[in-house]
Length: 431
Image (tube, rainbow, N blue to C red; front, side, top):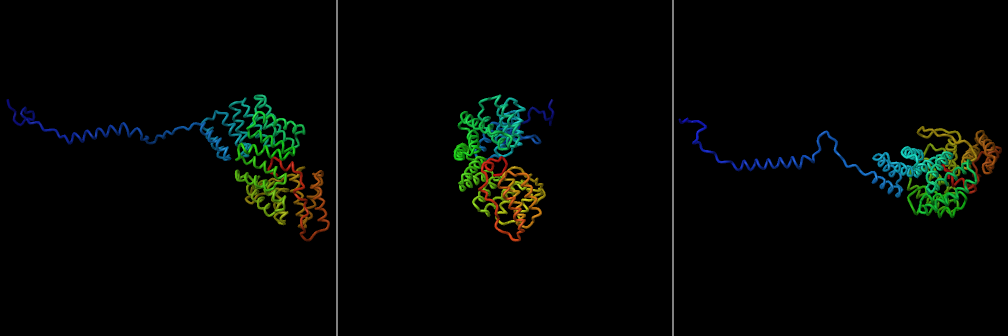
């Protein structure tokens, strides 16, 4: 039987294949496979965070140490904090951070870093050393001594501990809480530190400090220079070297060292303060005022900086300006933008006494004797052993007794007549 027209006809002719269409299909399949196997794996999925490689914390620590060597202390601090973020259980990172914070003048932060290290490792001797050092800079000498003794218990031959102990002994002596025997002990400790670590910056720094404290300024200069040779980019070392040059009367080198310190740490008012005092010593009061103003601007709430500026104004015959600044020292007040300034009580301190008797003198010369005589009385009652202050208190009284109507040449005793030791070693920014 034959079915006409059926599609199942056995006699139907087969069509020839379209090879062009097949080739296109093969190409499309190959492209799809390439896209799936090669391209898509490299494309991040939407709304999924992109994975980033984690940097080794050790590399941060290496970078931070390099920044410290370059004197870039604030950057070094930030880099150590990055390392700690990645490895928060590493006590050695907190110890290293505390050391840099101390050199940067961030003493409370350094104490916190050292105590964080101790939370991780209570028997870490270097953590106790850093805590002691930070406490010393904050004037807590008893706690500092306790911390350093604990470091010795854990590691008797820790050179850094011996170096820091030198500073604690000297600072407590200068503060009046230590003894003269403490200075002798400090000398011994400085030699031990050098024997244990002759190439350590801190060992030479400590040795220079005790030599400075005992008025061996030329030897102190050599030790500070040795420390600077190890790391020339630490502002604190240049300040120390400049102090000793200044005491020896080598004023050009003193200013040079203070200027280097200022370049390394421009936000610190201390170099400008020291430069202003140095120029005042040689009678260049206009320059002294310039640097005193810069120091004041760096830290407007510091009454010591206000006092120094007032003294420089007085010597430069800017008496109304001197009164304005010195009144803030004696009575306190506020900065130009309203920040509080705490007064400084009159105590047996050469620099503070200078602020007070200069204030009394300028008030007397402006014929404001009611206020001036009150200052003279305070000096006579509170610092009777300070010969320079007492001489100037008498001068205040004399001026008021003769009721000067003009403004004569200031008769303040010269700055060079002051005792150099407390000036060169005070732990606060009072050169």
